Image 1 (cartoon, rainbow, N blue to C red):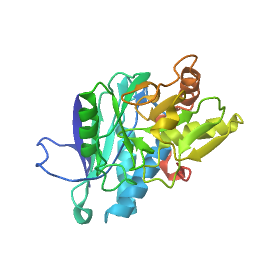
Image 2: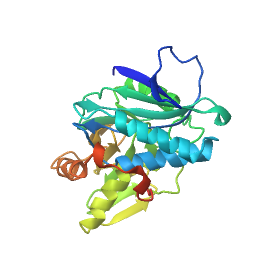
Image 3: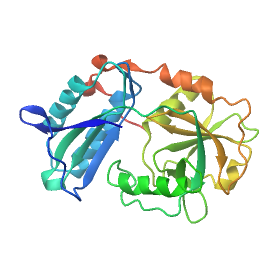
Image 4: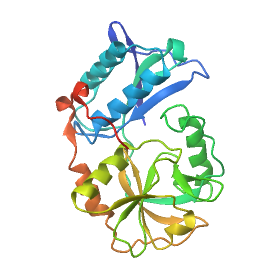
Length: 274
């Protein structure tokens, strides 16, 4: 992805001409896909980011709000983009930055594998663990997988490196999500899809699923970048259901929630729920 990096200053977003010093910490981050000036769930992403910044840095609410306004003015309205917003540095001297990145191609399918370990230090905040999670994904790529699935000591699923899992278990018309008291990031995309399901009278239940529980199930790997990706196989795991999947139809339902960037008002964002 090509990118330009901006730093938020009293004069607004300014292009960062020099590279960041090595080892600078990412405190909080968020990202989403922009398609021709529209985004799914942008207000929720902004609220998740704002809440985490206020909880994990000493930045003032008014400063973060001004930064968010500046980002909204800067977001491109043509083409496909995958911008990243972040707070970096230390909690006492955090810096707000914006990465204007072109989006990678969207994909509809994904191969899964167990992550070799769980390197997360702060699983409830998006940002601090992103580099370690990318390393997990790269390690799983060596065995032919696209996404690394973090499991606990009992082989129960927690989350993907950069995604959440939603499951239609075999012979079950309810939609299963990983129990929310598991140590995992509250997912904007998962939350929106769960709301769609409930609106259509589909039962959404929380459960601690093991990898073995995925046998014969339709498994969705969901994220703001791709929406829904259908898992086609699980390396050293059970066979998954890939015939007559629901993923394509539900991807359209999710995408139908997209709103124009110019209509987003972060000051009126709904309270974020996973």
